[in-house]
Image 1 (cartoon, helix red, strand yellow):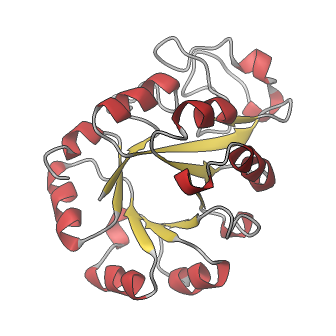
Image 2 (cartoon, rainbow, N blue to C red):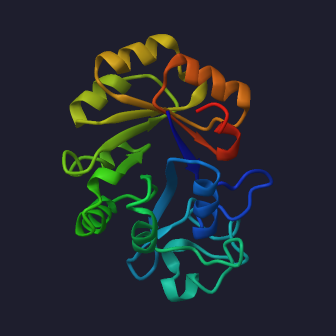
Length: 222
């Protein structure tokens, strides 16, 4: 079972999510993968950040789309570090673990694909999105996954899009869904699982991976 550090290892209270330090912390805790979010900033570059503003996760304010990277990088995103570029995260971690890149902005998939393929990291990456229409054009060169909080049309859409995996929210995961995913040859990675008892239950159910804010809690479970 692959343990993905969800935005690294931010824990609670959340601190330093989607930073280089948080990613290092997740790997040091035993994670085999990293999950993070990407958006386009004001100068067109792809940056690693969850929200469409920097207000919650940095000591600055403003919309990501309105700020150039030179403006973004002066703010503290946690541990004294800036919001990282996707290119930097790929260069630092792409050969070390599995990277789950979640698309947060429309229309950025081609740029993400270019950055991944330039580095020959396709086998180390999976690209996911809640907006499934953003994923066509990535597969089969880069594996894709459908993120969802509902079961409607999930497996049908995954087949049609050529997905490698489905990423359901933990409360909709059932043994029948796992069995159906297995039959269709989709990996199933579940989000966001933070309690040890839940981690144990999903392991027993046979899922392929978990996203967690606390990778260290999984060490006795994997």
